[in-house]
Picture 1 (cartoon, one colour):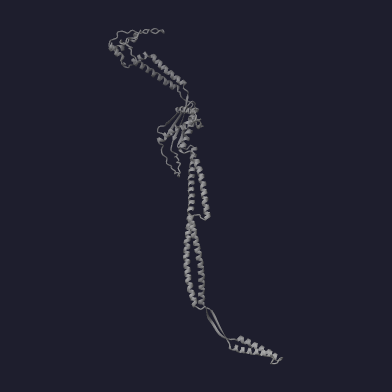
Picture 2 (tube, one colour):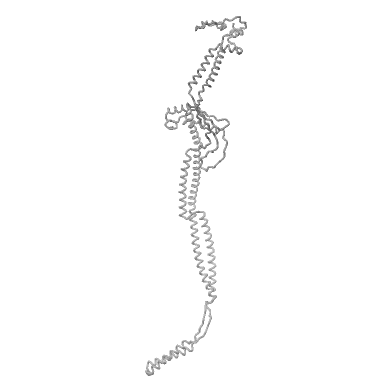
Length: 517
Protein backbone atom coordinates (compact mmCIF):
# COMPACT_ATOMS: atom_id res chain seq x y z
CA UNK A 1 0.00 0.00 0.00
CA UNK A 2 2.83 2.37 0.79
CA UNK A 3 4.40 1.66 -2.56
CA UNK A 4 1.10 2.32 -4.32
CA UNK A 5 0.52 5.52 -2.35
CA UNK A 6 3.99 6.79 -3.21
CA UNK A 7 3.48 5.88 -6.83
CA UNK A 8 0.13 7.70 -6.98
CA UNK A 9 1.35 10.88 -5.39
CA UNK A 10 4.41 10.98 -7.63
CA UNK A 11 2.72 9.65 -10.69
CA UNK A 12 4.41 11.04 -13.79
CA UNK A 13 2.41 12.03 -16.77
CA UNK A 14 1.87 9.16 -19.09
CA UNK A 15 2.98 9.36 -22.65
CA UNK A 16 1.20 12.12 -24.53
CA UNK A 17 -0.92 10.52 -27.20
CA UNK A 18 -4.04 11.75 -28.99
CA UNK A 19 -6.09 9.37 -26.91
CA UNK A 20 -4.67 10.65 -23.66
CA UNK A 21 -5.19 14.24 -24.74
CA UNK A 22 -8.74 13.55 -25.85
CA UNK A 23 -9.51 11.81 -22.54
CA UNK A 24 -8.06 14.79 -20.64
CA UNK A 25 -10.10 17.20 -22.75
CA UNK A 26 -13.32 15.35 -22.03
CA UNK A 27 -12.50 15.10 -18.35
CA UNK A 28 -12.06 18.92 -18.13
CA UNK A 29 -14.36 20.05 -20.90
CA UNK A 30 -16.33 22.30 -18.57
CA UNK A 31 -13.15 24.07 -17.48
CA UNK A 32 -12.10 24.39 -21.14
CA UNK A 33 -15.40 25.88 -22.22
CA UNK A 34 -15.52 28.27 -19.24
CA UNK A 35 -11.99 29.62 -19.87
CA UNK A 36 -12.40 29.84 -23.66
CA UNK A 37 -15.81 31.44 -23.53
CA UNK A 38 -14.72 33.91 -20.85
CA UNK A 39 -11.66 34.94 -22.87
CA UNK A 40 -13.66 35.29 -26.05
CA UNK A 41 -16.36 37.27 -24.26
CA UNK A 42 -13.78 39.60 -22.75
CA UNK A 43 -12.28 40.08 -26.21
CA UNK A 44 -15.66 41.01 -27.64
CA UNK A 45 -16.42 43.33 -24.73
CA UNK A 46 -13.04 45.06 -25.00
CA UNK A 47 -13.54 45.43 -28.76
CA UNK A 48 -16.99 46.93 -28.24
CA UNK A 49 -15.92 49.21 -25.39
CA UNK A 50 -12.65 50.45 -26.91
CA UNK A 51 -12.99 53.82 -28.63
CA UNK A 52 -12.11 54.08 -32.24
CA UNK A 53 -8.69 55.55 -32.94
CA UNK A 54 -7.53 56.99 -36.23
CA UNK A 55 -3.93 57.13 -37.39
CA UNK A 56 -2.24 60.08 -39.07
CA UNK A 57 1.25 59.61 -40.43
CA UNK A 58 3.91 61.91 -41.79
CA UNK A 59 7.59 61.64 -42.70
CA UNK A 60 10.57 63.93 -42.13
CA UNK A 61 13.78 63.67 -44.14
CA UNK A 62 17.13 64.66 -42.64
CA UNK A 63 19.63 66.14 -45.10
CA UNK A 64 22.74 68.33 -45.23
CA UNK A 65 21.80 70.62 -48.08
CA UNK A 66 22.09 73.70 -45.89
CA UNK A 67 25.02 74.35 -43.59
CA UNK A 68 24.66 75.77 -40.12
CA UNK A 69 25.63 79.43 -39.83
CA UNK A 70 28.12 80.24 -37.10
CA UNK A 71 27.40 83.54 -35.34
CA UNK A 72 30.93 84.78 -34.76
CA UNK A 73 32.60 88.24 -34.58
CA UNK A 74 34.80 87.32 -37.54
CA UNK A 75 33.86 87.29 -41.18
CA UNK A 76 31.93 84.18 -42.08
CA UNK A 77 33.75 81.99 -44.57
CA UNK A 78 31.54 80.40 -47.16
CA UNK A 79 31.67 76.62 -47.39
CA UNK A 80 30.03 74.46 -49.98
CA UNK A 81 30.95 71.00 -48.67
CA UNK A 82 27.95 68.69 -48.35
CA UNK A 83 28.50 65.70 -46.07
CA UNK A 84 26.41 62.55 -45.79
CA UNK A 85 23.80 62.36 -43.06
CA UNK A 86 25.11 60.38 -40.11
CA UNK A 87 23.18 58.12 -37.80
CA UNK A 88 23.83 60.47 -34.89
CA UNK A 89 22.16 63.31 -36.79
CA UNK A 90 19.05 61.23 -37.40
CA UNK A 91 18.98 60.11 -33.74
CA UNK A 92 19.39 63.72 -32.65
CA UNK A 93 16.37 64.71 -34.73
CA UNK A 94 14.37 61.86 -33.19
CA UNK A 95 15.29 63.07 -29.69
CA UNK A 96 14.35 66.60 -30.72
CA UNK A 97 10.94 65.32 -31.82
CA UNK A 98 10.43 63.85 -28.33
CA UNK A 99 11.60 67.00 -26.51
CA UNK A 100 9.21 69.00 -24.32
CA UNK A 101 9.74 72.13 -26.40
CA UNK A 102 8.15 70.31 -29.34
CA UNK A 103 5.55 68.16 -27.57
CA UNK A 104 4.28 70.68 -25.00
CA UNK A 105 2.44 73.00 -27.42
CA UNK A 106 1.12 69.99 -29.36
CA UNK A 107 -0.21 68.04 -26.38
CA UNK A 108 -1.58 71.15 -24.66
CA UNK A 109 -2.07 74.15 -27.00
CA UNK A 110 -3.02 76.37 -24.05
CA UNK A 111 0.24 75.68 -22.25
CA UNK A 112 2.34 77.90 -24.49
CA UNK A 113 -0.16 80.78 -24.36
CA UNK A 114 0.62 81.97 -20.82
CA UNK A 115 3.44 79.82 -19.47
CA UNK A 116 4.22 82.14 -16.56
CA UNK A 117 0.69 81.95 -15.18
CA UNK A 118 0.39 78.24 -15.80
CA UNK A 119 3.70 77.37 -14.17
CA UNK A 120 2.55 78.99 -10.95
CA UNK A 121 -0.68 76.94 -10.80
CA UNK A 122 -0.33 73.36 -9.60
CA UNK A 123 -3.61 72.35 -11.24
CA UNK A 124 -2.44 73.63 -14.60
CA UNK A 125 0.85 71.77 -14.26
CA UNK A 126 -0.92 68.53 -13.33
CA UNK A 127 -3.36 68.94 -16.20
CA UNK A 128 -0.52 69.60 -18.60
CA UNK A 129 1.46 66.58 -17.40
CA UNK A 130 -1.63 64.40 -17.83
CA UNK A 131 -2.21 65.61 -21.37
CA UNK A 132 1.47 65.24 -22.20
CA UNK A 133 1.60 61.67 -20.88
CA UNK A 134 -1.52 60.75 -22.83
CA UNK A 135 -0.13 62.26 -26.00
CA UNK A 136 3.22 60.49 -25.62
CA UNK A 137 1.33 57.19 -25.50
CA UNK A 138 -0.40 58.03 -28.79
CA UNK A 139 2.73 59.49 -30.40
CA UNK A 140 5.38 57.37 -32.04
CA UNK A 141 8.54 57.83 -34.14
CA UNK A 142 10.50 55.33 -36.14
CA UNK A 143 13.61 55.68 -38.28
CA UNK A 144 13.13 53.90 -41.58
CA UNK A 145 15.90 51.35 -41.86
CA UNK A 146 18.90 52.31 -43.99
CA UNK A 147 17.45 55.74 -44.74
CA UNK A 148 17.51 59.21 -43.25
CA UNK A 149 13.72 59.32 -43.09
CA UNK A 150 11.84 59.58 -39.78
CA UNK A 151 8.30 58.21 -39.72
CA UNK A 152 6.00 59.98 -37.22
CA UNK A 153 2.57 58.67 -36.25
CA UNK A 154 -0.20 59.94 -33.97
CA UNK A 155 -3.37 58.20 -32.84
CA UNK A 156 -6.49 60.25 -32.10
CA UNK A 157 -10.21 59.85 -31.66
CA UNK A 158 -10.99 61.53 -34.97
CA UNK A 159 -9.06 61.77 -38.25
CA UNK A 160 -9.16 65.56 -38.10
CA UNK A 161 -7.70 65.60 -34.59
CA UNK A 162 -4.84 63.29 -35.58
CA UNK A 163 -4.17 65.35 -38.70
CA UNK A 164 -4.22 68.64 -36.72
CA UNK A 165 -1.91 67.32 -34.03
CA UNK A 166 0.63 66.24 -36.63
CA UNK A 167 0.43 69.65 -38.32
CA UNK A 168 1.07 71.38 -34.97
CA UNK A 169 3.88 68.93 -34.31
CA UNK A 170 5.44 69.71 -37.69
CA UNK A 171 5.23 73.46 -37.09
CA UNK A 172 6.65 73.17 -33.55
CA UNK A 173 9.41 70.81 -34.66
CA UNK A 174 10.52 72.97 -37.59
CA UNK A 175 10.40 76.09 -35.39
CA UNK A 176 12.50 74.37 -32.74
CA UNK A 177 14.92 73.17 -35.42
CA UNK A 178 15.29 76.73 -36.72
CA UNK A 179 15.85 77.99 -33.17
CA UNK A 180 18.58 75.45 -32.51
CA UNK A 181 20.14 75.89 -35.94
CA UNK A 182 20.40 79.65 -35.63
CA UNK A 183 19.86 81.89 -32.57
CA UNK A 184 16.63 83.85 -32.51
CA UNK A 185 16.86 87.56 -33.18
CA UNK A 186 20.11 87.31 -35.15
CA UNK A 187 18.69 89.22 -38.11
CA UNK A 188 17.30 92.01 -35.92
CA UNK A 189 20.54 92.19 -33.94
CA UNK A 190 22.75 92.49 -37.02
CA UNK A 191 20.38 94.99 -38.63
CA UNK A 192 20.52 97.28 -35.58
CA UNK A 193 24.27 96.82 -35.20
CA UNK A 194 24.79 97.56 -38.90
CA UNK A 195 22.82 100.80 -38.60
CA UNK A 196 24.77 101.78 -35.47
CA UNK A 197 28.08 101.00 -37.19
CA UNK A 198 27.00 103.05 -40.21
CA UNK A 199 26.24 106.07 -38.03
CA UNK A 200 29.55 105.71 -36.18
CA UNK A 201 31.40 105.37 -39.50
CA UNK A 202 29.67 108.47 -40.90
CA UNK A 203 30.56 110.44 -37.78
CA UNK A 204 34.20 109.30 -37.86
CA UNK A 205 34.43 110.01 -41.60
CA UNK A 206 32.98 113.49 -41.08
CA UNK A 207 35.55 114.20 -38.37
CA UNK A 208 38.31 113.03 -40.69
CA UNK A 209 37.01 115.21 -43.54
CA UNK A 210 36.76 118.22 -41.24
CA UNK A 211 40.30 117.62 -40.04
CA UNK A 212 41.57 117.31 -43.63
CA UNK A 213 39.72 120.45 -44.70
CA UNK A 214 40.99 122.43 -41.73
CA UNK A 215 44.61 121.44 -42.27
CA UNK A 216 44.45 121.00 -46.05
CA UNK A 217 45.38 117.35 -45.75
CA UNK A 218 43.86 114.81 -48.05
CA UNK A 219 46.51 112.15 -47.74
CA UNK A 220 49.02 112.46 -44.95
CA UNK A 221 51.63 110.17 -46.46
CA UNK A 222 51.26 111.78 -49.91
CA UNK A 223 51.42 115.25 -48.37
CA UNK A 224 54.53 114.36 -46.36
CA UNK A 225 56.15 112.90 -49.46
CA UNK A 226 55.26 116.02 -51.42
CA UNK A 227 56.65 118.31 -48.73
CA UNK A 228 59.83 116.27 -48.46
CA UNK A 229 60.28 116.46 -52.22
CA UNK A 230 59.69 120.21 -52.16
CA UNK A 231 62.15 120.64 -49.29
CA UNK A 232 64.73 118.65 -51.23
CA UNK A 233 64.15 120.77 -54.32
CA UNK A 234 64.43 124.01 -52.32
CA UNK A 235 67.59 122.82 -50.64
CA UNK A 236 69.08 122.08 -54.03
CA UNK A 237 67.85 125.48 -55.25
CA UNK A 238 69.47 127.11 -52.18
CA UNK A 239 72.78 125.39 -52.91
CA UNK A 240 72.55 126.50 -56.53
CA UNK A 241 71.70 130.06 -55.44
CA UNK A 242 74.71 130.13 -53.07
CA UNK A 243 76.98 128.87 -55.83
CA UNK A 244 75.55 131.44 -58.24
CA UNK A 245 76.01 134.27 -55.73
CA UNK A 246 79.56 133.15 -55.06
CA UNK A 247 80.27 133.14 -58.79
CA UNK A 248 78.68 136.57 -59.27
CA UNK A 249 80.72 137.98 -56.39
CA UNK A 250 83.90 136.74 -58.01
CA UNK A 251 82.89 138.25 -61.36
CA UNK A 252 82.01 141.56 -59.71
CA UNK A 253 85.37 141.72 -57.94
CA UNK A 254 87.22 140.99 -61.16
CA UNK A 255 85.12 143.49 -63.14
CA UNK A 256 85.59 146.21 -60.52
CA UNK A 257 89.35 145.71 -60.52
CA UNK A 258 89.46 145.87 -64.29
CA UNK A 259 87.25 148.97 -64.40
CA UNK A 260 89.63 150.75 -62.09
CA UNK A 261 92.50 149.95 -64.42
CA UNK A 262 90.81 151.07 -67.66
CA UNK A 263 90.00 154.80 -68.41
CA UNK A 264 86.36 155.45 -68.97
CA UNK A 265 86.90 157.68 -72.10
CA UNK A 266 89.41 158.04 -74.92
CA UNK A 267 90.26 161.05 -77.32
CA UNK A 268 88.94 160.62 -80.78
CA UNK A 269 89.44 164.16 -82.44
CA UNK A 270 91.69 167.03 -81.25
CA UNK A 271 91.83 170.50 -83.19
CA UNK A 272 93.30 174.03 -82.48
CA UNK A 273 90.94 176.81 -83.78
CA UNK A 274 91.20 180.63 -83.58
CA UNK A 275 88.60 182.55 -81.57
CA UNK A 276 86.78 183.69 -84.70
CA UNK A 277 83.51 184.32 -83.12
CA UNK A 278 84.94 186.57 -80.40
CA UNK A 279 86.92 188.53 -82.95
CA UNK A 280 83.93 189.08 -85.14
CA UNK A 281 81.88 190.12 -82.17
CA UNK A 282 84.49 192.51 -80.93
CA UNK A 283 84.93 193.99 -84.42
CA UNK A 284 81.22 194.57 -84.67
CA UNK A 285 81.19 196.16 -81.24
CA UNK A 286 84.15 198.33 -82.09
CA UNK A 287 82.48 199.56 -85.30
CA UNK A 288 79.35 200.38 -83.37
CA UNK A 289 81.30 202.29 -80.71
CA UNK A 290 83.17 204.26 -83.34
CA UNK A 291 80.02 205.16 -85.14
CA UNK A 292 78.49 206.27 -81.92
CA UNK A 293 81.50 208.50 -81.10
CA UNK A 294 81.35 210.05 -84.52
CA UNK A 295 77.75 210.91 -83.87
CA UNK A 296 78.58 212.36 -80.43
CA UNK A 297 81.51 214.44 -81.73
CA UNK A 298 79.22 216.28 -83.99
CA UNK A 299 77.24 217.46 -81.06
CA UNK A 300 79.75 217.52 -78.23
CA UNK A 301 83.30 218.47 -77.67
CA UNK A 302 86.00 215.85 -77.36
CA UNK A 303 86.48 216.91 -73.80
CA UNK A 304 83.04 216.04 -72.78
CA UNK A 305 82.68 213.24 -70.32
CA UNK A 306 80.38 211.20 -72.56
CA UNK A 307 82.83 211.31 -75.43
CA UNK A 308 85.68 210.36 -73.15
CA UNK A 309 83.80 207.42 -71.75
CA UNK A 310 83.03 206.28 -75.26
CA UNK A 311 86.69 206.61 -76.16
CA UNK A 312 87.59 204.58 -73.19
CA UNK A 313 85.19 201.81 -74.31
CA UNK A 314 86.63 201.92 -77.79
CA UNK A 315 90.13 201.52 -76.39
CA UNK A 316 89.06 198.64 -74.24
CA UNK A 317 87.37 196.96 -77.17
CA UNK A 318 90.45 197.33 -79.30
CA UNK A 319 92.55 195.80 -76.56
CA UNK A 320 90.16 192.95 -76.30
CA UNK A 321 90.16 192.58 -80.04
CA UNK A 322 93.90 192.34 -80.09
CA UNK A 323 93.82 189.76 -77.34
CA UNK A 324 91.16 187.78 -79.12
CA UNK A 325 93.18 187.74 -82.26
CA UNK A 326 96.05 186.15 -80.38
CA UNK A 327 93.95 183.59 -78.41
CA UNK A 328 93.14 180.24 -80.15
CA UNK A 329 90.57 177.55 -79.11
CA UNK A 330 91.69 173.96 -78.55
CA UNK A 331 88.95 171.52 -79.60
CA UNK A 332 89.25 167.97 -78.33
CA UNK A 333 86.64 165.23 -78.94
CA UNK A 334 86.49 162.19 -76.62
CA UNK A 335 84.27 159.11 -76.53
CA UNK A 336 83.52 156.24 -74.12
CA UNK A 337 86.00 153.43 -74.30
CA UNK A 338 84.20 150.38 -75.81
CA UNK A 339 86.18 147.98 -73.68
CA UNK A 340 85.38 149.94 -70.54
CA UNK A 341 81.77 150.28 -71.64
CA UNK A 342 81.40 146.52 -72.21
CA UNK A 343 83.19 145.80 -68.95
CA UNK A 344 80.95 148.25 -67.15
CA UNK A 345 77.90 146.78 -68.77
CA UNK A 346 78.95 143.31 -67.67
CA UNK A 347 79.62 144.63 -64.19
CA UNK A 348 76.21 146.24 -64.00
CA UNK A 349 74.50 143.11 -65.31
CA UNK A 350 76.50 141.02 -62.87
CA UNK A 351 75.50 143.33 -60.05
CA UNK A 352 71.86 143.09 -61.08
CA UNK A 353 72.13 139.32 -61.31
CA UNK A 354 73.78 139.30 -57.91
CA UNK A 355 70.94 141.27 -56.41
CA UNK A 356 68.43 138.99 -58.13
CA UNK A 357 70.31 135.96 -56.87
CA UNK A 358 70.26 137.39 -53.38
CA UNK A 359 66.56 138.05 -53.56
CA UNK A 360 66.00 134.59 -55.00
CA UNK A 361 68.09 133.03 -52.24
CA UNK A 362 66.14 134.91 -49.61
CA UNK A 363 62.91 133.68 -51.19
CA UNK A 364 64.22 130.11 -51.31
CA UNK A 365 65.33 130.34 -47.68
CA UNK A 366 61.93 131.69 -46.65
CA UNK A 367 60.09 129.02 -48.64
CA UNK A 368 62.39 126.33 -47.27
CA UNK A 369 61.76 127.47 -43.72
CA UNK A 370 58.02 127.57 -44.41
CA UNK A 371 58.08 124.07 -45.88
CA UNK A 372 60.06 122.73 -42.93
CA UNK A 373 57.63 124.37 -40.53
CA UNK A 374 54.69 122.94 -42.46
CA UNK A 375 56.30 119.49 -42.40
CA UNK A 376 56.94 119.82 -38.69
CA UNK A 377 53.33 120.86 -38.09
CA UNK A 378 52.16 118.03 -40.32
CA UNK A 379 54.27 115.53 -38.43
CA UNK A 380 52.77 116.90 -35.25
CA UNK A 381 49.30 116.14 -36.69
CA UNK A 382 50.33 112.64 -37.78
CA UNK A 383 49.19 110.94 -34.58
CA UNK A 384 45.80 112.63 -34.59
CA UNK A 385 45.30 112.07 -38.31
CA UNK A 386 46.36 108.44 -38.09
CA UNK A 387 44.00 107.89 -35.16
CA UNK A 388 41.10 109.46 -37.03
CA UNK A 389 41.92 107.55 -40.21
CA UNK A 390 42.43 104.24 -38.38
CA UNK A 391 39.21 104.76 -36.42
CA UNK A 392 37.26 105.50 -39.60
CA UNK A 393 38.83 102.50 -41.35
CA UNK A 394 38.04 100.20 -38.41
CA UNK A 395 34.44 101.39 -38.31
CA UNK A 396 34.18 100.88 -42.05
CA UNK A 397 35.43 97.31 -41.73
CA UNK A 398 33.01 96.69 -38.87
CA UNK A 399 30.17 98.13 -40.92
CA UNK A 400 31.03 95.93 -43.90
CA UNK A 401 31.28 92.91 -41.58
CA UNK A 402 27.93 93.57 -39.92
CA UNK A 403 26.36 94.40 -43.28
CA UNK A 404 27.54 91.05 -44.62
CA UNK A 405 26.17 89.23 -41.58
CA UNK A 406 22.92 91.21 -41.77
CA UNK A 407 22.45 90.22 -45.39
CA UNK A 408 23.38 86.65 -44.54
CA UNK A 409 20.87 86.43 -41.69
CA UNK A 410 18.19 87.98 -43.89
CA UNK A 411 18.91 85.31 -46.48
CA UNK A 412 18.71 82.72 -43.70
CA UNK A 413 15.34 84.15 -42.62
CA UNK A 414 14.09 83.96 -46.19
CA UNK A 415 15.28 80.38 -46.41
CA UNK A 416 13.51 79.63 -43.12
CA UNK A 417 10.30 81.21 -44.42
CA UNK A 418 10.55 79.05 -47.53
CA UNK A 419 11.28 76.05 -45.25
CA UNK A 420 14.67 75.42 -46.82
CA UNK A 421 16.33 73.56 -43.97
CA UNK A 422 18.29 70.42 -43.25
CA UNK A 423 15.02 68.84 -42.13
CA UNK A 424 12.18 68.72 -44.59
CA UNK A 425 8.71 67.29 -44.68
CA UNK A 426 8.97 64.28 -46.95
CA UNK A 427 5.27 63.43 -46.53
CA UNK A 428 2.50 65.66 -45.26
CA UNK A 429 0.19 64.38 -42.49
CA UNK A 430 -2.24 61.84 -43.84
CA UNK A 431 -6.00 62.01 -43.27
CA UNK A 432 -7.53 58.55 -43.03
CA UNK A 433 -11.13 57.80 -42.07
CA UNK A 434 -10.42 54.13 -41.49
CA UNK A 435 -9.96 53.39 -37.79
CA UNK A 436 -6.81 51.51 -36.88
CA UNK A 437 -8.10 50.61 -33.41
CA UNK A 438 -10.04 48.52 -32.63
CA UNK A 439 -10.00 45.94 -35.45
CA UNK A 440 -13.01 43.64 -34.81
CA UNK A 441 -12.09 40.87 -37.21
CA UNK A 442 -8.48 40.76 -36.08
CA UNK A 443 -9.46 41.05 -32.43
CA UNK A 444 -12.04 38.25 -32.83
CA UNK A 445 -9.52 36.06 -34.57
CA UNK A 446 -6.83 36.75 -32.00
CA UNK A 447 -9.41 36.35 -29.20
CA UNK A 448 -10.50 33.00 -30.59
CA UNK A 449 -6.97 31.76 -30.85
CA UNK A 450 -6.18 33.10 -27.39
CA UNK A 451 -9.30 31.57 -25.87
CA UNK A 452 -8.47 28.15 -27.34
CA UNK A 453 -4.90 28.46 -26.17
CA UNK A 454 -5.92 29.49 -22.66
CA UNK A 455 -8.56 26.69 -22.55
CA UNK A 456 -6.03 24.07 -23.53
CA UNK A 457 -3.56 25.55 -21.04
CA UNK A 458 -6.20 25.31 -18.31
CA UNK A 459 -6.87 21.66 -19.25
CA UNK A 460 -3.15 20.93 -19.27
CA UNK A 461 -2.49 22.47 -15.87
CA UNK A 462 -5.61 20.83 -14.42
CA UNK A 463 -4.44 17.48 -15.76
CA UNK A 464 -0.93 18.07 -14.43
CA UNK A 465 -2.32 18.92 -11.02
CA UNK A 466 -4.61 15.85 -10.85
CA UNK A 467 -3.80 13.31 -8.10
CA UNK A 468 -6.52 10.72 -8.85
CA UNK A 469 -6.74 7.64 -11.08
CA UNK A 470 -9.10 8.30 -13.91
CA UNK A 471 -8.83 5.21 -16.14
CA UNK A 472 -8.30 1.43 -15.68
CA UNK A 473 -5.21 1.75 -17.77
CA UNK A 474 -3.67 4.12 -15.22
CA UNK A 475 -4.60 1.73 -12.39
CA UNK A 476 -3.17 -1.15 -14.32
CA UNK A 477 0.04 0.80 -14.92
CA UNK A 478 0.41 1.93 -11.32
CA UNK A 479 -0.61 -1.27 -9.52
CA UNK A 480 1.04 -3.63 -11.98
CA UNK A 481 -1.94 -5.88 -11.52
CA UNK A 482 -4.51 -6.53 -14.14
CA UNK A 483 -7.83 -4.80 -13.69
CA UNK A 484 -10.66 -7.33 -13.69
CA UNK A 485 -13.64 -5.02 -13.89
CA UNK A 486 -14.77 -1.42 -13.55
CA UNK A 487 -18.01 0.01 -12.14
CA UNK A 488 -19.26 3.05 -14.11
CA UNK A 489 -20.54 6.13 -12.30
CA UNK A 490 -24.27 6.39 -12.76
CA UNK A 491 -25.94 9.80 -12.32
CA UNK A 492 -29.41 11.00 -13.07
CA UNK A 493 -30.28 13.77 -15.53
CA UNK A 494 -31.85 15.71 -12.70
CA UNK A 495 -30.26 18.67 -11.01
CA UNK A 496 -29.46 16.48 -7.98
CA UNK A 497 -25.80 15.94 -7.44
CA UNK A 498 -24.45 12.55 -6.35
CA UNK A 499 -23.99 12.13 -2.63
CA UNK A 500 -20.63 13.33 -1.40
CA UNK A 501 -18.80 10.43 0.08
CA UNK A 502 -16.49 10.81 3.08
CA UNK A 503 -12.91 11.68 2.45
CA UNK A 504 -10.63 8.67 2.04
CA UNK A 505 -7.97 7.79 4.48
CA UNK A 506 -4.60 9.27 3.49
CA UNK A 507 -2.88 5.95 3.70
CA UNK A 508 -5.32 4.28 1.30
CA UNK A 509 -5.22 4.72 -2.48
CA UNK A 510 -7.84 6.89 -4.16
CA UNK A 511 -10.71 4.99 -5.75
CA UNK A 512 -11.45 4.98 -9.42
CA UNK A 513 -13.47 7.91 -10.69
CA UNK A 514 -15.87 5.61 -12.42
CA UNK A 515 -16.59 3.81 -9.08
CA UNK A 516 -17.23 7.04 -7.17
CA UNK A 517 -20.75 6.93 -5.57
